[in-house]
Image (cartoon, rainbow, N blue to C red; front, side):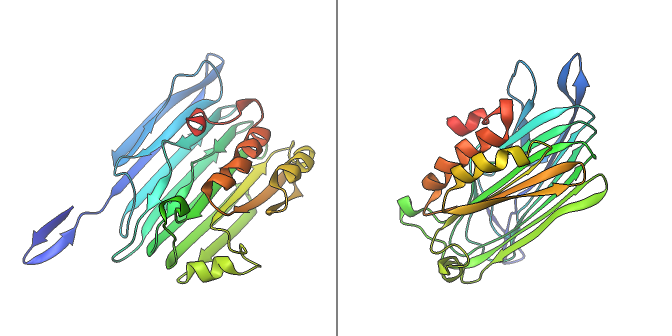
Length: 277
């Protein structure tokens, strides 16, 4: 929406912040606090047991240059929560500035979080930056996923130009255990076409599991990832870290492997219900 101020056109920007805090009560994880502002909303479907499920919603229906969204999740000791999004987040062409999303996850002792948003779809000439900060107690677990599709081939769309930056910082017991910065642009198509980057694929995903179970899941994860990606394991203090990267020719092909991989790594919690709709 545009408004005219003193003869100039000023574009309204999307802004929103939402935070939830949950803790164990009466034998299951329950909501303690919920804060919502602007376009950022959180809904919690009714579930019979753990994990608590939360659905993030951007009521603006997408993002463009200058838009800002912030999400925060705090899980207290022994709590468990699964977080997803209502739909794929769309990042449209930016006339100026960039769209930004900031995510902060905090998990207490013996707690668990599954951060499983649906794919981010990046349109041509979009500008986007996302930061993900995860703070885990020494014995907490986390499953973290971010998947990105550069254009929609089925619609004849391709993200040829633009900028994209994804920054992750994961700490456990006060120590940094995982850090990465992925940047691509301004010539996105050319970069994705390089064999060392994605060899022409336009859909990519990073999946991180921090858990004592991680090492035992490496073999099955490698079978699911197949030749279009990789998976590896590292010991991290008293826990372990499994990292998988996938790429595919389009979003549909990517999801065909993401679904069984998430089901494997998320244990009994399985796949978020919205993923199967």
